[in-house]
Length: 242
Image (spheres, rainbow, N blue to C red):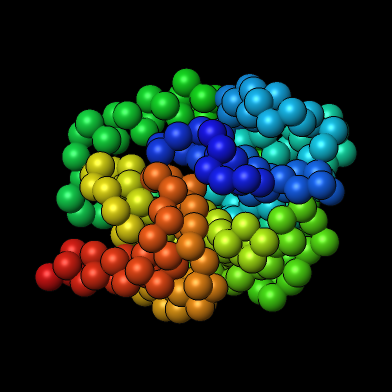
């Protein structure tokens, strides 16, 4: 799905990944689930591009529903995979994420999430063998001119990827616009977060980007601005704490 010139999404509101395209090639942000590889190929074809145009994958964190086809691209096509140094072990299958479901869960959204994950090969996670590590503040010489923003909380090495060229910031699970366990829509804290308070604190860096597009790993794209998304996440967090 083309969101704007140079910006495309694969997957859907349950699990999504993104493509940043320019005349240098393509940067992939997150890699969804293994079965999204076919979606990647279809999106590349729709854009008039091929796998050979992919210059790198950047992972917003090391959870399995973001690793997807990353190792396949690395192994079969030599595409480097970047992840924050604090999540490198998780991306290799070491450190494990939080598993608390939290409050307010509803059966149907949970069933839909796990059923979709199974259909897309989520039970067969392929962890990374090799990664290139990044840090907060890194500016990568890649399509979309991505800037790394440290967003610890969801995981120790969670990041956002800011592309000023595209007026977009890719947030992984720093927030969600559709909660996979409750079905609630709109900007809000993501589930399965290691340190919820730290994740909320990290949102200041997201608001500071002033990006129009906020693109989560789960939920619909948000084009109402980063500052407004952050305000709504904090509002939702406060409401759930009452």
